Length: 193
Image 1 (cartoon, rainbow, N blue to C red):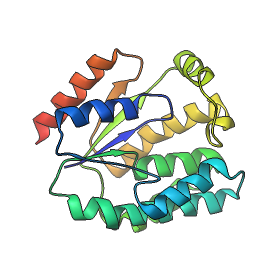
Image 2 (tube, one colour):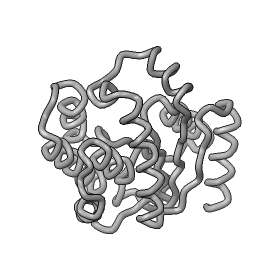
Image 3 (tube, one colour):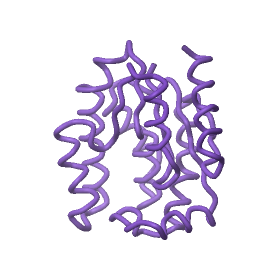
Image 4 (cartoon, rainbow, N blue to C red):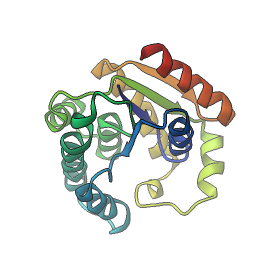
């Protein structure tokens, strides 16, 4: 089962993936961007090498996604896959950044994943106040430095994208206690295995 964890930065996706991996030690843990050797190079460019044209940024994410699907996801679909991000965030971030047409972004991403969509999505949602507190504790990368309004627009776009793609999703309150979130996710996966 291909399970994707979606949400803007600081919502606790990585924490929950680590916790779930202890409960499912045979699960494959991966991420976008950066789940392949090519992806790690693309991730570095996107997060640390400064501003690039928004179309170039979107296409780099697509290149990472296509490689990730073919090298990591597709060969392991018989296993439990816990992925930090998927095409849902790719579409949402590109749409929120430059308001690219959502239908075009969906088409490009569907081309990149070649029919492989998450079976289940955990969509982490965070309120403005909690987001502000969490962002204040870290150094912003190139994407986070676009500001809180941008991040919240991405979050709302993720929900709409998941609905448009008809991917089953469970909404997670990112401000809930860590153990409560883990229990919710564990139960949801268990019910669907």
